[in-house]
Length: 171
Length: 285
Image (cartoon, rainbow over all chains, first blue to last red):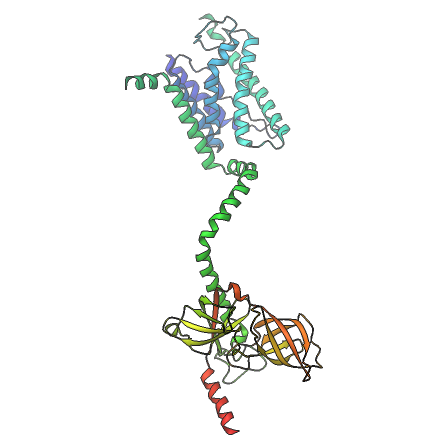
């Protein structure tokens, strides 16, 4: 299975998972994890940036169509892709420039993965929630939603990564 | 040209990002109402005074049109007044007979009809004061029709040409109109004395009547020119006539003759009939 097919299949599976299962999870009324982010986390870094943006936009828009929040997830996903290389550079312990390897559990240690996933998810969640709420009223509640969603999504994403990707360790 | 291509190639991803973000924002704003309301509410502090200032200037340009609408509306309201009809819709007096239609409703016979006109010439400080209005015989204006303003009585039409008419204003010694003072309900005659364009005098009021400053002076409706109950002014001063037992009351005019613009000309539809009757009465004497 070449890389393109792999990414397309992963994209389809993650979007299906999100739309069919995780969109219907409303834990405590506001916990709604965005596990489809995994498709963007594992999107190769060496493809053209404009293509990455278009993919992110498409992914977000599909989620939006099912959540009836046209544009919010698409916008957040693009910010996610925008931040990804800079955050990787900032967190890169080796200070190796132009690191185009997608960070997966086998290549980075757990603390790095946790920190990276947490920050990326936070950025995405912040964007989505702020665009959706669009107000600073009852900001403590908004903050609670952002924090809880970020933590829950991070947990799910790490679980998925550690369950399905360790096979790559040998590469 | 080459530089442009290089630039585009280099920053194509930035352009993609910005373009798609804009698309996202457009989608958000098109499909969700709340952000728009939230922004409008947050920026109200700034927009309200600016809009008010702007509108305060701009609305002056529309006053002409608005005035026309208002005049039109006023005319309709004035024409619909109960006092313009000979037989009002009183269910007690006109239950059956000639005065009811097939549905049993009281037929209303119109006595007075209003049209609007603009003042094009006006004097107030001369000995005999006239106005000119921009409607004439082609618009149905005839001599001896009464002229009112929104505030009260203005005068009586005297000469009529094809497109214009002259009006003897209340500020004219010949303009003596029949009036009654309320609440005493006493008839008197309004006359003007040269000098003061803001007041006229009400004469022939018996001394014993209880009349106070501030009482309203209205048209009596007996002259067949003015409809009854139109405000002329309010009593501002009371003085006793030394030779006779009549009071002379100074009446502050309701109409500001200095700023008179739109007037309403009132036509009595049965005036000729009524005048004929009156002249017959005189011949009998």
